[in-house]
Length: 308
Image (cartoon, rainbow, N blue to C red):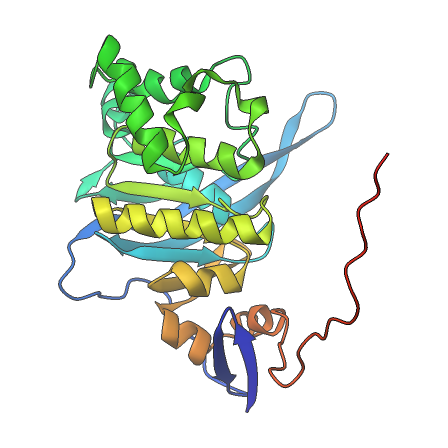
């Protein structure tokens, strides 16, 4: 039996264990909002002058899970395991190979483009790169307000008022509405991305590594903001990350993904406190251990800043 620290929690990890259960797990008193059933997403490998298909990359290879209203499900794994592809396939940003995705009991993969466009009011995404996900030629007011106009929620002068309200709700001053994305820091740009996702009042948001490109102090602010918004609007999150410390902090349940498959799924306490799959244990072992008996000692005064 070994111990380690994840976030602010010290946990015990057994030296062995059986293979974890994979698939759906019931969460009482909450209605299922999303069901993913045996989802496959394969990308062709092409070679030669004629670009013939010689194989496939099985990015997602039989993923099954569900998500309930107001719940945060963490999808965790190393880079390249297929977790981002799962999120984008659910939103049909990437075409699936096979399987089914049901939102509130309705299969969304066969929907025509027009119906899917209407459904995206309830399904939104926050991207990993806050800078790359914002149009550099558009002002913040236009970036956040465009979805409101496209879906006919508000029009005219009411758009600006709604955007200013969203900026304030996400921790930004309403006077920043006429600035461009390059005038903001990384954390501020991510807040703009969250405000844009929140504009249509969705019920489910896919958070694709929303804090991985940010400093540690800013990460905690963004995570607290997401939690506050979830409590206020009853949002469900599919939270994609490679950081077990972040997953432990924000998620109700955790699904561990490896090589396109989910190898373990369960509550946060089950997966982190009693991991059954060897890959889960390897992810937890990669989290830096903190010895509470050793504390940094500062000696002397901080150097004066150089002035010219």
